[in-house]
Image 1 (cartoon, helix red, strand yellow):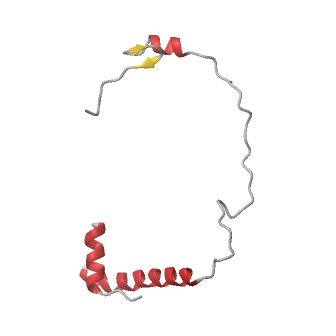
Image 2 (cartoon, rainbow, N blue to C red; image 1 turned 90 degrees about the vertical axis):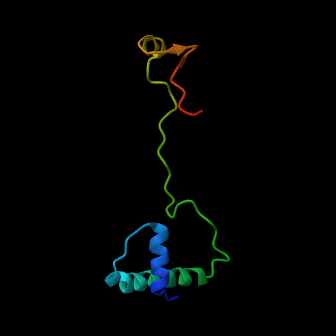
Image 3 (cartoon, helix red, strand yellow; image 1 turned 45 degrees about the horizontal axis):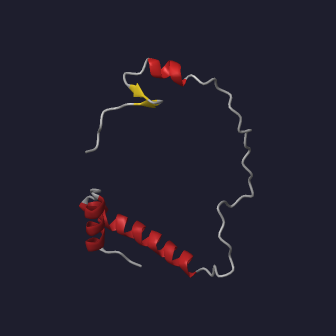
Length: 95
């Protein structure tokens, strides 16, 4: 796919990225190359390829789900500017 000056100017307006007049041709070529790569990727046959979350069979090392901190909520809420029923009270920011 080949982009021209008009498309580059339109894209630059949409993205609010300034493209100087002397750089339009180079930007058009680079964007065209990217779109060509997308077209090549789209043409690849992926019919029998299973989707995967990650390309490596890595297993995340998990730590035991054990409480390691002492409960200090009463101590911390005692010094809070405003607290009620185990909740911190803050000013309303959305009406």
